[in-house]
Length: 425
Image (cartoon, rainbow, N blue to C red; front, side, top):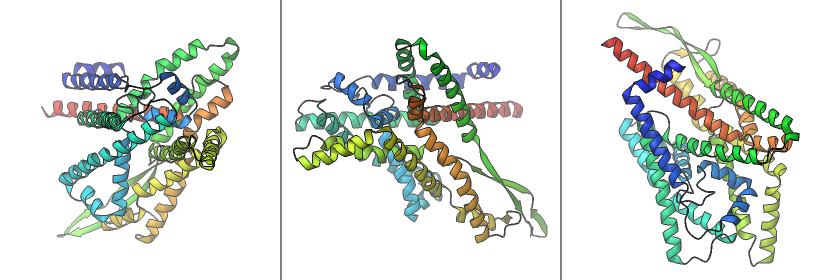
């Protein structure tokens, strides 16, 4: 490992890429600490401490939301736009053709549409967030010009982060958007550790030790599930072409235990956030019955048992949904049959499709339950240890571990390519 690290920093090209990416991440962290004017900081801190949903959204914004900064939305609108565009490929054949069949030009056009869709989503989300902050008394009266100025600033911040993410991705050191989220999560660790030290209670030392052990076990489980896959043996029949025998041999069809990644958690978070934001917004309504219903909904969602249960069920449901979107057993079966491949003991065509569907549903259950557990992990840790200042944020750990593993793989790939270049020389 030490030799690999030395090798990475000895290669000028890779070293320059790493320094460049770190500089861009530093720019992002600087922007996340530049607040928009007119915010009551004390009320804002109390508001976030009492709202788990906004705390989760703040994690995906890299801490920019908690500071009500010029990048308070983070890359959230871009992620939402990407999800919508991916789903559109399953609904509209034209979008699927552009994304998969038109080559590099089609992918560039698809990415361009994603960027354009990010703009209205950023405007809508910034307006909703400012309206929510105003309804909670954290911002003064705003006129039309103030609204336009603040929304334009926040939207520009999101577009700027989207641009930073794409520049980082071009360096082939990991996914740029994921690295921005990663930087935001990691930046919160010093504050969390500081809070832990300030509230240190020697009588709870066993709880702290248990928390440390549980964190290590959680990281190991995330790595195990993320890397876990079911290999389906595929045999290819030999074919005669021009008097010659071609084809034959065997291979594997890898099916990941967690095909959906963290997307189901993002979906579930968005769904859970919507009624909470609306309820908090309408709780101060002048209409009595509207305010009463909104307050009841807000109180229900504030209950950790109710919130955690709904969150868990939504994550499980969205895991199955997104897996169905990204993996189509029918198309896989058709491609295998077209290439002369088959699964031993399974007839080509519909039987292969049914078999793949059965296997995917079984392994997805494990991935779905795991993601659901990761999503509600902070509540479990708080309930077991009683420590409120620092928790094992399952979603945060999942993102951090996934990003680190992906970055390491890309670095290793670049090192291997350079070794091949040396051999060719």
